[in-house]
Length: 252
Image (cartoon, rainbow, N blue to C red; front, side, top):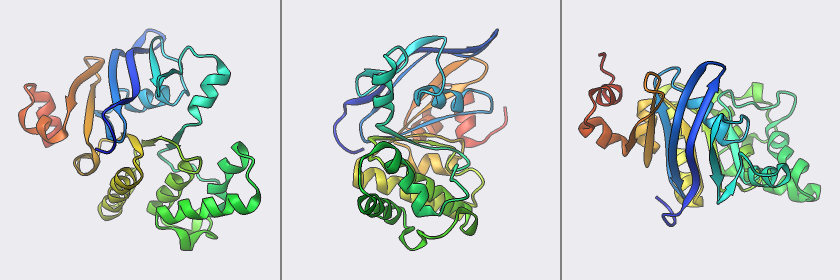
């Protein structure tokens, strides 16, 4: 883990419901500065729902979320907007704009949220592409590169405004094992070399073991967190058989 042990994100007593259906209730945890923090669990447990609340796309039924000490659930809109600009997000599909090349995709946040001149924007965008190993593909369209490269380009765009936190939703989805492992290495290197804090939603066990400093495991039936800690310790020593089964891919 990089940096100090200070918490960068604090989630307290978060409850999410859609009508009469409760997704989870009273979920509380913190994310420390510089760590790779993974949210995992079985299908329908609320992993991606939790992520959407942490990046401000949804409002919870109850609870609070603070990023760098600033409340995003109940804060005023202008301050909330400023806080959310400190984060970067990579969605599961990558969500690159198909009509723009990679350089233009990465430049877009800089054009929208900064006053930089065109040369400065291009220089920064090329640097971000270099960080993810795509500096020689700046002029390529998303349709001309592989799925793994699209994910890398999406990470470069998420880093355009130098966020302190990157949120990744199922980064390995749809990738072959080798490409997925290469993406895991990139995530670890960005965390170690740049001190970026990562919050990652995934159920891919090889990726979890490769990148996670710490995990929380959500459970659909109990509607909350059932395990927290180092994934290897949870796999080998957790007192609940259901947790050990998940990490060992064993049927009940």
